[in-house]
Length: 588
Image 1 (cartoon, rainbow, N blue to C red):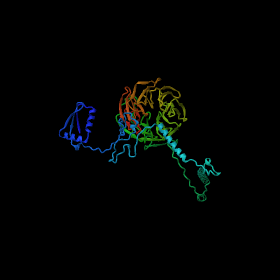
Image 2 (cartoon, helix red, strand yellow):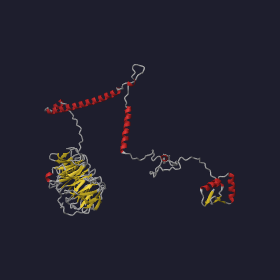
Image 3 (cartoon, rainbow, N blue to C red):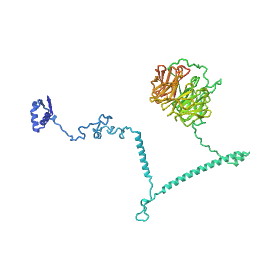
Image 4 (cartoon, rainbow, N blue to C red):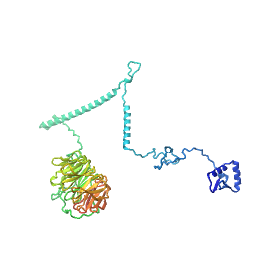
């Protein structure tokens, strides 16, 4: 039955219409018979016209075979799709606890249940506080220990019959026979091991005494001696593998064919064709990579050039090895210094370059001979040194400073091999030490976000630079003019402080654009002071203009963080970079 409604009709008209349609079967047949010839048109109660359009009987017949099922969901319930992970309203508990509605896919054998997101069940991501996790972890361990203790609970002796005089009841003693038995077996085992060890030691002692007596009272005839004394075979002792960080077990490897040339010169002599330019020549920006040094099995942490001639490059890696490279000629590795068991933290040359210091995470500071590779001195105070620096004065080449993880700066004397001064004012690990003001003072930075200025030899700081907006500054470099020092700040910028008595921050000039947060990237200047260079965490090398603080160039150098960079003092356009990818690149 199709009803076409014309005009406005309210709910009452529809109700009366459905009541008229639900008449008896005879009236339906009569109405269908009369209306089969031509359709009828009637007026509704509210002025609308109703037109009944006749349809064949076989089309109007409908069979509802499904049973009537009462809905489990309330009329005002809001259905939520479990596949969605966001809810933009506040659901009730009754709605959230309803079962999932809808059919599953019975004809797809690879389909998962709606309550499952993997074949073995359901996996949901969750975020739990570490305090709650630790509490649950401790509770679980306690329950496990309690269950194990319940299993190991001591047993009592039999209570006996209550009707007899030997009844013990709950006052029965613990049965300790099993415990005594285990204790006796353990003691017997220890006693046997001790006896065996004692017999072996006595046998070794008698063997050594007999061999020494036979060697001292040896007869003239070898045949008679062999027949008189039995032959004793010496048992080799176990040789422990010593660590290279232990004193006396350092090694060095020379990779060249001969140490001296036909004139008796070593690699410490600069090449004859090298031109030592002054600091007044103009510097140029590097454009391309001309060489790559690879040899460290782990990342390279620090690089230093030989003072004066700068024809040799020293590199310290996280593999604990120090390598000496040739910047001219064939540019091969010349020598490897193996004396540390952990990564190198810092390197420092003496003024003449004949000696250098290595500070490692194995708590050792060692002095090496650059030419022979010999380890001259080993020093340690059981603290991890993060930086080391020779005193640049010519009359104080036997003294150096180290900043350690115990918040202190130690002043060492190589002649006595002892500390002669301690600077204890920082509140966290000391990261860098930089000499200023004709080496009369030095600046130290720490993880406590403070900069302290010291008079050399006086353990009281003369200047403290601290501000709530400051960040940690793990590296400091001095401008070639000596008037400014650049500090690598952990908020991804380089700050400038004056080196005069005020140590004032230059708020008008700062170098930014690189990302160094979390890395102690090295800062360096061109010899003429026109450019500032620094690496960043993405392996780039940034070059800024000193006057305008604008980025002149950005070079993608490494795959890992560019931790170190040096501008060659005599080559106007050559830069050396090192990274944690284990490579050292030479740019021109």
